[in-house]
Image 1 (spheres, rainbow, N blue to C red):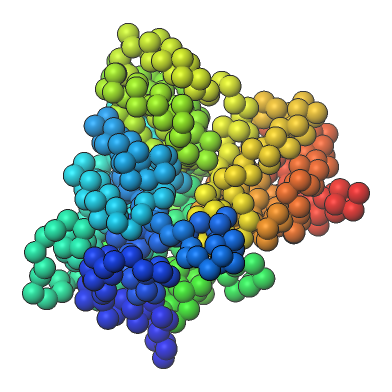
Image 2: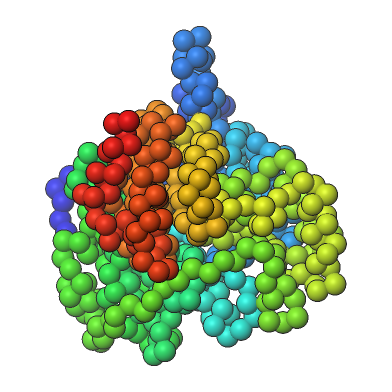
Length: 554
């Protein structure tokens, strides 16, 4: 796809000398007012970090003629969410030494730090690298952290998912040594390295990959640019998913991936590279809001994509069979691994590990040597627990007042919320900080209707970019403006159908009341076993909006 005028980010990437640009000079310079240059801000993403400022204090500081409170979010790339006990303990030390005293589990099975100051940025990234983890390509226009089922079941199926996720994650990293020069002290190269997969300007936009088995779609495979679904004869390849959109811009939209091909069991990496090249060569490089692979698929179609991929691979790809039924199991609580050991799944509200929870996790990971696994739902699994340690581990958590999964309602256990304010520059409204009030409203309505034990997925974001995947699942709440949200319904719990907007500009305090009539109708009129999102989809947007409209008018 030819474009006469590349976007500003494309110009910066083209001139970056392999993701270097002004980073070395600016990070080594004395901190001055105003933050980093646009070029440095853009290129830092590829190295796993965003420059941010505290939006809570920005206005007052501006009025006082003071600079914003600048800091950095640093994201750890953890393939398949797997961490060792030693790695977690090292990351916990970093949270205390350099960040704001918290860690955060992401919706892509990574770990984020917030509040890292510029003078500590290099040391933080180097310390992460010393744990045999990396921040490279955790952000930016490259393949991000590759995700899969978090379940540490010791069987061939789960071993294959984890192995493929790790293999893809390693193979699809950028070849540039800029990261090692800037953050790890490696001697500078005489010339930029070749990027045989990405090319000199990398991808038009971020690129996300997930691998799943149909019985565990906790990774929401259809929300990804590229997905691999296990099949008896290999893998179903899905292409063109993505959650982001912009309010009032109908040309932007969330989209579920299309099944494009059926491939053999050992073709995952070469097909992944071909799909990355498809994005590289055909994505829109003039408009970043139109740059994701999902728009290429939406405009050109599955047959076109399969033909281009077949040409790239030099063999004809088979069409994909119909998608199998996907489901999402509950990974929380105690589960046998199949090797005589157990895992304990802990619900981590909004993924935020702080306070007594952080202390407790350090204690049990250090004492029992268990290995943490980040889930795509922002939760944490403690794996490899010896049978004889179960009671003592649980007692240690309780002693630190850590709520175990049974303390949460089903809707709370399934809830996700993005960070949003005060750090995210994209946020239009609160996310993580209004998680509890939104949950309380819905729990009150569900309790009144006798529905508290129903399994409902609830996802909250502070903007329409969709980091918590709000357009899948039963209920999505998306920031519209300060204190106002768009409410979505009609997706499904398994992540195979997009939701539709129910009501726009809903005040925070009215979210529960807006959904109440629809929840009541579900109670009275649902079919046997019909989930809330399924019921809303069957009812249809017009009838659902009529019910919600009455509540808003009242």
